[in-house]
Amino acid sequence: MTLIYRYLINILFPIIIILIFVRVWFKKEDKDRFKEKIFISSFNITKNKDKKLIWFHAASIGELKSIIPLIKKLNTNNKFEFLITSVTTSSAKLIVEQLSNEKNIIHRFFPIDKQNIVIKFLEGWSPDLILFVDSEIWPNFLFEIKKRNIPLILLNGRITKKTFLRWRLIPNVAKKIFQTFDLCLASSNKSKNYLEQLNAKKVKHIGNLKLSAEINLNKQFTENKNILKNIRFWCAISTHPGEDLFCIKTHLNIKKIHNNIVTIIIPRHIDRSHNIKLICNKFNLKTQILSDHESINPENEIIIVNSYGVISDYLESCKSVFIGKSMLKKLKHVSGQDPIEAAKHSCKIYHGPFISNFEEIYELLNKLKISKIIRNEMELSDCLIKDLNNFNKTYDNKISVVDSLGKKILEETYNELSLSIKNENSKT
Image (cartoon, rainbow, N blue to C red):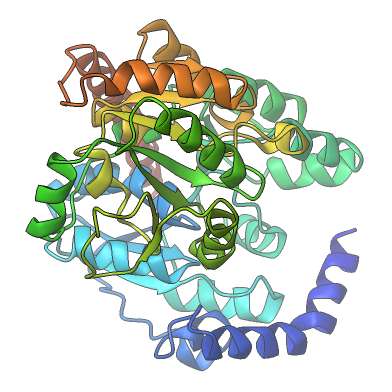
């Protein structure tokens, strides 16, 4: 199976290169740095040989946000250098925004999992400790890391039921892959159980590291902040195809009571903004697609946010929020989006019945009455109408429970990694 995987990567590599160039054309890749993903000559290795190198790989923004506090904590003694790899351009921008003041931190884009590229990457950077975050499983990297006896940790590991069932179809391969990890810190008890069944060794559940993520606000226009303070609005964030109509119908129901209601939709993928506007047009709703550095027109009923990394700007002023990827039964095995950011902003959170990716976190938030399950637009409309009768936002002390748990998870994860680093140092 491993040989088949390697053969397919080699065959598909020219196509992958073409696809990446196409993505550059459509501005979905960094035009100055995309070659880091595909060409050995573009690795741009700048390692400090006097310091041990810790390599974190986090694919996108959500995973990256979860490890930033941990990296900052590990970086306090100036003993290490950190390489962070990611896949998306938005994650690269986030590193500039949040880690530019930190010393000893380097960002590169994660290269294609092709064996000769993998070998050159590991030889060049020669990391002393490697941490793959969430569900990043790349066989060529894992096997080459194992050959070099570099300590490897799966951090905040997440295995969905769908992924687990796929791995069960190839049990011998699964065992070989998951035993490359020296330590697996699972994000939930469910993931811990799946990892153990897949024969991963030394599996522990401390808690979901995303609870420790910091809240960092962008410098939103003062004009927009003032507008949000003076309008009656709610947010639908991380929506997926099929949920936009649900949100628009909810808006129409609320409008019967609050005629001046504004609904802000922040889709999971902003390239759907124009499709959402077309749905709004069918209902004759005044709609604005809001891009970076544009002002909100409060005369519009629907605002579709066409920017990445700005959710916190809206959650800061928002009293009530619906979180998407939770109403679609067809996605039930990979359902749910991260509610932690909204919780830390003291928003009242509503979600649908399909939340498998964040089940344990939602259980905590539901218990604290921070979040609530809804099953149709009438239920959501009724809840929002009650919330919007008084649309001034208040801050709930229950949020301190979430913050305290996040700090505890961060501290215990830090201690676990410190122990791994100490054990590695004792070998050298």
